[in-house]
Length: 284
Ligand SMILES: Cc1ncc(C[n+]2csc(CCOP(=O)(O)OP(=O)(O)O)c2C)c(N)n1
Ligand code: SF4
Image (cartoon, rainbow, N blue to C red; front, side, top):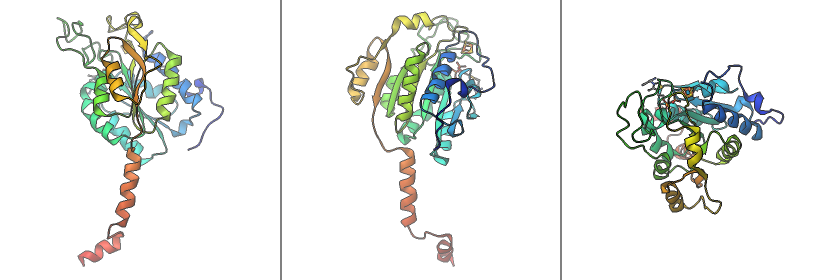
């Protein structure tokens, strides 16, 4: 993979001006992403962002990279295909909580089992932004939305607990207003060998008047420094605590999808017949 030594964060911005609402949490995510790309000296020609449908799905338009704006909820399997076809690429998936945890939620446990070496950013605003304010899987209980005039009746799911249970090998949470910390976290996620998944709390000031920047600021707390991210039990305990912790909950080294595919390709070469001619001979 080639490396660029001279690119600055602004060099990773595409020519397209973001059309997000003023104050959208996704802006902080974009700023941190460009900082991380510059720090990691990523060559834009090696960078692919596969995005879902939603305001967050527009992320890929605003970065200088190869981009694939997929169908709603289908970004993860598409990205897995991209990585399988060309393991040398830096592959990111970016989408919303609706895209990734609702319609696309069924892909997550299987993505975790495969453990492809890519990074998934779930821009969680606890609402469906693009479609104007319907309740999402992370909307708090009682929140009035376009689809829940009497308040959300179903409790929100907890993404971090899900990711831990599914077996992802790098699990983190971040808050979009802390751009510097997010830029560092993104670099850690990129360095991880395997599937890194980040719940990126990114408030939607237009359609969510509950999960606001101020509301989140009162609740977020960095993961204590003495937390051992290789201790899964400790990660579960942190996820179950009342605070909305930010940082790396869990990381572990497991065989990646690319390694497993290479192993199978190698093994299959040892199995007779190993050429097309030999295969034809078997039927003659
Ligand atoms: C199959 C399908 N169902 C529904 C939609 C309509 N739709 C587009 S985006 C979206 C949800 C967006 O919410 P989220 O994924 O949380 O992203 P945000 O806009 O909040 O960033 C929905 C339901 C669609 N495009 N395709
Ligand atoms: S609707 Fe919400 S999520 Fe979408 S761009 Fe506006 S503030 Fe951001």
